[in-house]
Amino acid sequence: MNRRQILLNALSTIAQLIGNGALLFFLYRFLIREVGIERLGVWSLLLATTSLVTLANQGLSMSIVKFVAKYAARESPADVSLLVQTALITAGAILAVLSIGLYPGARWALSFVLPAARLAEGLAILPFALVSLWLNVLGTIAQAGLAGHELITLCNYIEFGGAVSYLALAFVFVPRYGLVGLAAAQAAQAALGLAAAWFLLRRCVPGLPWLPRHWSRLRFREMLGYGAHFQWITLCQSVREPVTKALLAKFAGLSYTGFYDMASRLVVNLRELIVQANQVLVPTISSLSEGGRDVIDRIYRDSYRTVFFLAVPSFAVLAMASPFISVLWIGRYEPVFVRFVGLLAVGWLFNVLCNPAYVVDLGTGSLRWVSIGCAVTAVLNAGLGIIAGKVAGGTAIVAAGVLSLIAGYLIILVAYHRQRHESFGVLLPHESRTILALSVASALVLLPLLYSGERLALSPYVFAFAAAVLAASIAVPAWTHPVRRRLFQWLTAGISS
Image (cartoon, rainbow, N blue to C red; front, top):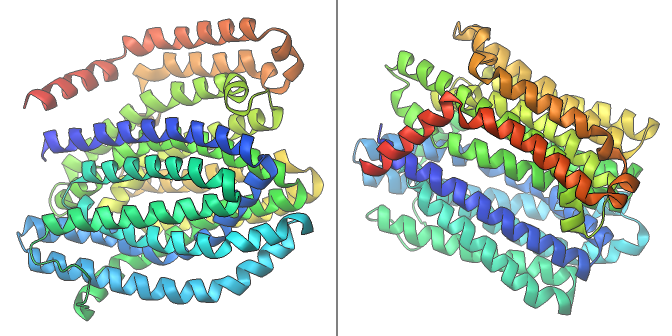
C-alpha cells in the first residue's frame, strides 16, 4: 500500500471538493440574480432528466478502475490501452444511441412537469444538456483510467479546472443568452475536461492512440462481468434524484425544485468531501482482495471510525448553519431551503456512515447486497414520494426521499456486518459517543430556528452567536479525539515519507 500516494490522492480530493464548493457558491448566487430561482429549477430538472443517459457508463467506469489497477500492477500497458479504448468506444456508441432515443421521451417528460410558460426554454436547452452529458461520460471513463493508476490527484486537477472554466463561461454567456448560455457553458466545460483527461492518460499509457480505434471482445466481457452488478446499482442510485425533482416540480412547483437543488448540492458536497477521500481506497482494496482479508477488515474498522468522527459533527454543524448559509447564498432567510438542508443532512449522514462497507464491497466485488439496498432506496423513493406529494406537498417528498435513503443503505451496512462476521458494536465507536451526544443536542437546540424565519430576521447576531457556541462545544472533544491525533500522525508520516 503506497501510503504517500493514498495520502496525496485523499488530500487533493478534499482540496478539489472545497474549491468546487466555493465556486458553486458564487455560481448559484450569480444564477439566482441573473435567471431567478424558477428558471434555475428548470435547469436542475432538465439535468436530472437527461442524466439518465449516464447510466450506460457507470459500470464501465468502475470496471476500468478495478482492471486498470490490475493490469498496471502486472506492468502490462498494452492491456491497459486496449481496455480503455474498448470502454470508450462502447460507451460512446451506446450513449449516442441512448441520447437519440431519449430525446423524444425527455421532451414528453418536460411537457408533463414544466408549466407552459417555461416549456419552450426547457426544450431549447435540451440538446445542449444531452451533448454535455455525453462528453462528461467519456471524460469520466478517461479519468477512471487515471484513477486505476492511483493518479486520482490528476483527476482532481481536471475536475477543479473544469469547475473554474464553467464558472468563467457562465459569467460570459448567461447575461447574454440566459439558460441557453448556461447550457452552452457546460457543454464547453465538458469538452475541455475530456480533452485534458485523454491527454494526461496518453502520457501514462504508452501506445494509447490519439483517438480510440481498437475494440476487444475479451476485454469487454471482462468489464461486463464486474460492471453488470454495478450498472444495476448505478441505475437505482441515479433515478432517485430525477424522480424527487420531478415530483417536486409536479406537486410543489419549480421554486421548490430550485431550492431543493441548492440544498442537495450543499449537503452532497459535504458528503463528497468525506466520502471521496475514503473512496481512494478502492484500488488498494482491490489489490488486497485475494489474500488480505484481515488487512481489509482492519481498513474497514479504521475507515469507519474516521468517517464517524468526521461526519457526525460536520452534518450537525451544517444543519445548524443552514439559516445563515441561506442569507449568504440566497440573499434572505428561505425556510424551504433550510428545511431541505436539515432533512438531507440526516439522510446523507446515514449514507456516509455506510460508505466504508460500500467501498469494501466495491473493492472486493461483493455487490449482491449493495444491489438490493440501492433497489430498495429507488423503489421506496418513488412510491413514498408520490404518496407524500399528493397528501402533504414538497417537504414531505424530500422527507420520503430521506427515509428511502436511510432504509436502503442500512440494508447494505447490516448485510456487510453479517457476511463478514463483523461486530455491530463498532458502529458506535466508544471514543466518539461524546461528539455524537453533543452534535445531536446542539442540532436540537437550534431546531426551532430552522422553521422560524421571523426570529432569525429579528436577531441574526444572536443566532450566529448561539451556533458558534454550540459548534465550539463540539470542537473541543473533537480536538482531543484519538482519531484526530491519528490522522495528524498519519498525515505527518505520509508527508515525510
